[in-house]
Length: 184
Image 1: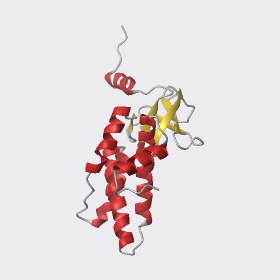
Image 2: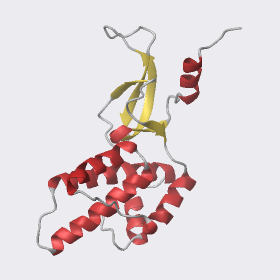
Image 3: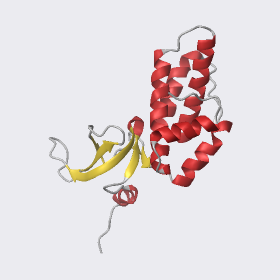
Image 4: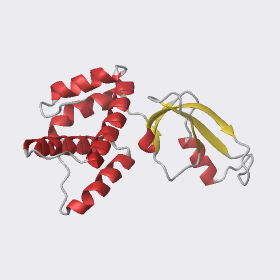
């Protein structure tokens, strides 16, 4: 009988399969195209790496250790979860900032969490902020625009994959659901 160390057993249990789609940090949805060892100086020869292809950027390749704990890696949500998320969007709360200096950090934190509900809050907050700025005749900050685009890209790509529909259809479905959203 072979005794497998607990840490190794846990890693195997959470290991993803080749061909599976996962959410990988702020990159968003990626397909695991391979799981292999790599010949890198200073890295154990038996260390496994995921070879990831971003869902919307097929020309890119990401290599990350299977045991990476610094970047969020999780399974893509199910079709049922995706539909529940879309149905619940009208009730999503905006983010509140007691201090404007914390605003940028909070957006980054929400996006890095890879949590669909957090992404919705970022999108809704930034959309309303953009509308407010435009109504005042002011510019929408470039950093806010970047956060909005990244949150939209990551959320809509995952919903698109989970629902098995085109990303534009996801945007349109959400636009219909929420009168306050104007999706670019």
